[in-house]
Image 1: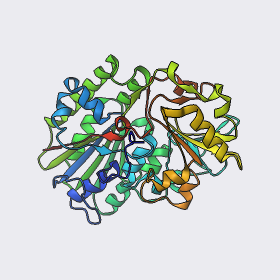
Image 2 (image 1 turned 180 degrees about the vertical axis):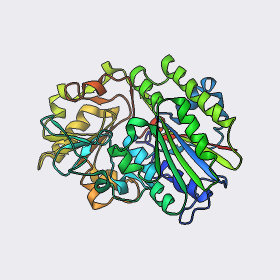
Image 3 (image 1 turned 60 degrees about the vertical axis):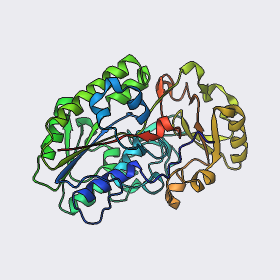
Image 4 (image 1 turned 90 degrees about the vertical axis):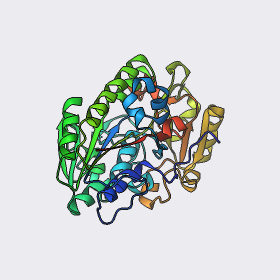
Length: 382
């Protein structure tokens, strides 16, 4: 399986905030990424901006590519927004923080969708879990933002206004002050305002439209390239206004690959992929499989037979032993991971009936390919 990128690399997305806080001189944090010493730092996460996509479309993003002088980071597994943002926000891998996928098993027997913090049962019914399984219980590890605020750093998170108080924000990014924004203009202004603080100051900012366009139209499509150019103009405007002794870090949560829906395997129309299963979680490029009692080996072999060379199907034990979820996997987190995990090299495993929206998308991520795992770490100093 030489197509896989090992998530246990030293330069990981989870190292970004600890390294930035060390660069601010905050006690208790270590800089493993070589961030310049600074008075204030801002981390702008551009959802879906994979390293290979950035380099392939350099003409559409000259400002971003002018900063692409180092090596990429490894996002971690699975390469999905909820997992990666929690890895960034906590400074830990999924095996410790427990947000192990796009959807995954929760204690009451359903699948948690952490972006919405709702559970879907085997019967397809959905219910909110904010009260029944609070984010602070599901992910109790103190975030890097909480630790920074306790150490006296002025901490600010800047994201779309509707993200304030959501389950994922509470799980991954609690701590400091949340500022809701509406467009590129106030996102950029909030980042610059935070960087102008007398310090030490840390700001996290999020932009999600590149990922959205990539899902709908495909990464590298003309709509995607035009959106990339807009992100580049935002970053260029920030570079022109960076205050002295400040550092801007641009990162991403995952890359993306194009998948023609006609080429995907549909688990909802393939009986062998449903047999023996209680739940199918994850997303089209990385599936958590939860077998009925005693059916694990049958599920493992059935999925291997159907997928063949398209990807790899492994047991939970193998994935944990190989470090997919990081060097540490707690007992509580282990129970959330599928007993069988299927990752794709080519194509996707969709669910046309259970997940019609996701199944119609042209851009996907979640797996262990370099296109999905490698994300930029772009550094600019004021």
